[in-house]
Length: 397
Image (cartoon, rainbow, N blue to C red; front, side, top):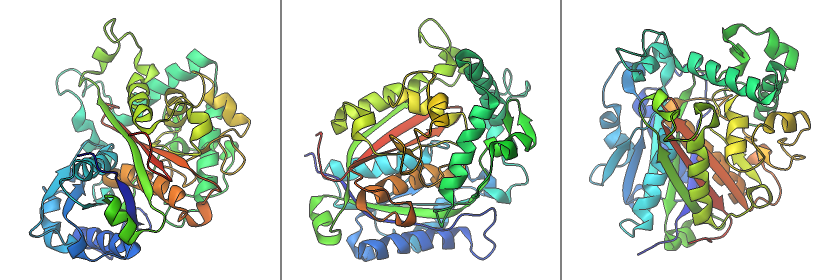
């Protein structure tokens, strides 16, 4: 049984470095209750729960999802936790999609929370993903790895650090319209270039913040959508791919690609588009909410997702090609992950912002005539990647 799956409720908190006024379970409850209110539903209308939770080391505890069971209305219902690093939020949405698509449940609540800033150094936690004997002592980190990636990309395509800076300028400017965004403001290329160097060529403003907050989404079948949402966003395409643990194994003759190419994103997008009936993403998709914790991640994904040719995204950035209302495609009108990165729910927030554009509920960020929107999420050292297409009518199945 292949059920049509629709988004019928969303909610996200404001994001900031710390949230001393709420506990983790209170954060999760606020999001769950908010999504129910948005959909006009009660807890009894929810059949199952998917909990979006990345490493709990950030909070110094284990299995924080267990604390939350009673507070997110999941007692007595099926509940699963999803964890794929930074890709967790997107993976959680796709897990809920499959639970409804299969006909197993009428409706599923996706919810999660994050308190990443409770650790003195999140990078120490993130570095645990590297191999103990061969990689961790180099020392690799997410910052240095993406720095190496960015160095290779800029050299290969003849682009500059100022080109990367323009990505941050656009993201912060977009975030001015987003009441939930962590970082926002009218910054300049010169401001980005003057910010502290973190890992060449990446500077402080090229990198996302550590954000705390929570988010939730409710997905349901067509009957539930008709009951609770006048204009739902239909999930028309989902896909995910996983790369090898060893970074070096992605740069061999068997993969026929360099790590810089991010082939994982291309394969995922093509599979997602096939399901959604997308044959020309530049013409058919109006909004792309990208998982872009670094300025480099936006151009690389735009190229891999078929919006432009390899090596051209930053040149098109100079021409305003990705701007909010005047661009060919509006890229991360929310400001994206570059402005807000609550790791456990970053991918979920990307999906929420994309779905809201289709439903016409994006507030000051809303674009006109959005028929299709895509969201992405990446985890680990780009070992996990997922892509989801939302549409204003069911299609492509």
